[in-house]
Image (cartoon, rainbow, N blue to C red):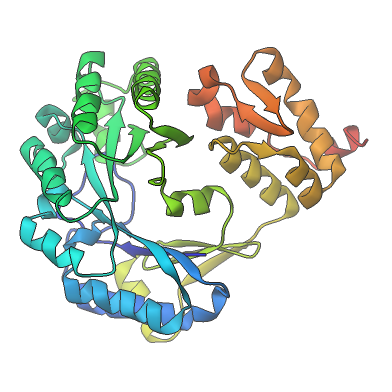
Amino acid sequence: MSIYIHIPFCKQACHYCDFHFSTSVKHKKKLIEAIGKELVLRKEELNQPIQNIYFGGGTPSLLSKSELEFILDTIYNHFEVSDYPEITLEANPDDLSEEYLKILSTTKINRLSIGVQSFFEEDLKLMNRAHNSSEALHSIQLAKKYFTNISIDLIYGIPKMSIERWKENLQQAIALEIPHISSYALTVEPNTALDYFIKKKIIPPVDDELAKLHFEILIKELTHLGYEHYEFSNFGKPKFHSQNNMAYWTGKHYIGVGPSAHSYVGNQRKWNISHNIKYIQSIEANKPPLTLENLSKVDQFNELIMTRLRTKLGVDLNEVENQFGLIYRAYLMDQIKQFQEKQLLFIKDETLHITPQAKFLSDGIASELFLLDLSDLKKNRP
């Protein structure tokens, strides 16, 4: 069981970001109070101990110690929390002064996820990040004095990022002995500044083939040094895998609080309104502004395929049969034949996995395995 807290504030807008946030903190006090109240209103939704608490955003490192502790105290007062939960704070390098890190080390937070993205100035400027390259480096060096469980984010596939510069980025992260690295391909989301700049030819388009080469280098460099590639975008040394990430990818239940936050409880998806003022007003009226979606059996089957194929765990065929029935397993076995022939998928110990050369294509392959029409099940009836 997990709790995700969305903090919708940023100093400035990154050009690639389409998450919900505001660059104004005018209503921060009321919003933090509303997050606390939402936690209380929804405390009955999770009936097992909380294993993970994750502050995401936005930029959670804009919160003060008292604001962080208010939220954490609310959780501890209204939920059962395990003895050793993983409590992560996403942080931007420019927020991580030594004074702030000292403060964080006195709270229950025990893991930092630092949004470095790149150690090169030109990449950071292209993405409109709030920090510079020296802050990226210095923040990690300081953080290691106060935390052992540290993750950094790196982005590959950035326009004009050569293979050599990507390798240098990785070498810098490796030299810092970071135990966990999350790395993502730069994605051009509609209606973002990046989308606009590419359409206006101010920035070159993203090169998918170059991103694929970056991804292959990423795997080779990190796995060679003992990082386990346990999920498509995540690499961790032993005992440093993100428990929060794995909870998502293995279908564990969680609630998300704050504007735009998503939840998964039972067979339902829920998400809050992506509007700070409307969120606050709704919570003050004791009505969490949630949209609800009931997941059908087909939805759950497709989601299991998508999430598990991204992980080292793969898709347990016996689990598919036990959860959905033999007919679903038969359908899946029929669908995977074409990918087995192309050496993109393989089965080992009754578990379906992506082959190493196909990892970059995992989401696309998973979508090809989805069940879209119930009539297709009848064709595969054992």
